[in-house]
Amino acid sequence: MSIHPAGRVVRSTESPHSETRRHVPIRTFLHTDDGVTIDSVYDPPAFVYDSSRPPARDLVFVVAHGFTGDVDRPHVRRVVNTFTRYGAVVTFSFRGHGASGGRSTVGDREVLDLAAAVSWARGLGHTRVATVGFSMGGSVVLRHAALYRQEAGDRTDAHADAVVSVSAPARWYYRGTAPMRRLHWLVTRPEGRLVSRYGFRTRIHHRDWDPVPLSPVEAVPRVAPTPLLIVHGDRDGYFPLDHPRMLAEAAGDHGELWIEPMGHAEHAVGDELLGRIGDWAVTAAG
Image 1 (cartoon, rainbow, N blue to C red):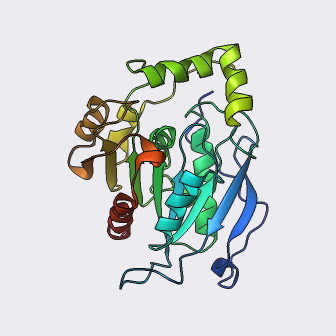
Image 2: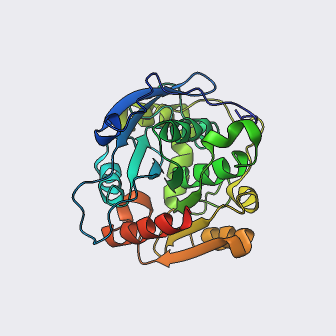
Image 3: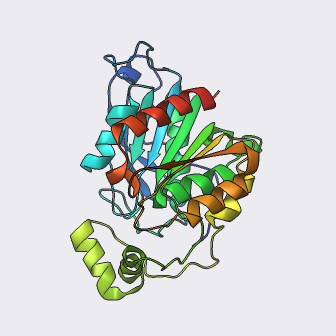
């Protein structure tokens, strides 16, 4: 289920480029390079904000949710509401999640979903894009940044200017914690996929990866020189601290690691931390 890095992104079913249209929320379906429809939402920068600095209207955050999330989940909307104080926000449901089409490949072809969302965000007039991913989405933003490089010719409209990976794994097939063993049961067993479909609104593809995609820790060195922030909780029940440390070591000098007093992904990240991530992105995205 792996993608060739030279794939093009097919844009949205509508192209609202005007200044007027970008002052209101937009919901539409995007189409990926492999023809999957992706439910996507654009939220403009907030007109009312708490800080003395207005939001950066040329900056857009593209948020990649975790496994079993979607654009309408309350924890995803909370992330959106915080980031609109710093810029515009694009959220989307990964394939197989919520109202999007297709079936989840649990981090492989989801790179195409993110690329379509980034390309759409740039088509709305935003010149700076910060991708922020959580858990599975955290692995996707790393692989996306490695595959869609700014200097890669025909893919420049899909590249990120700054990357934030929160609660991401460093390597595939990790089963060292009880939550990850449960997740592997959902993904690999027919009865698990039924539970996922009807219990979590997440439709999972039955095929194994072939070939196995680039792992997050293999992708990280290819992210440079794009600024990279790795965020992980010291009480993460899914991935222990050796995962973010592996990612930070692979990133070298171009990456920054924050170990925070929190659990796992969107449910655990607090508003104060989201605000610091927003501040980091405003500066790092150039």
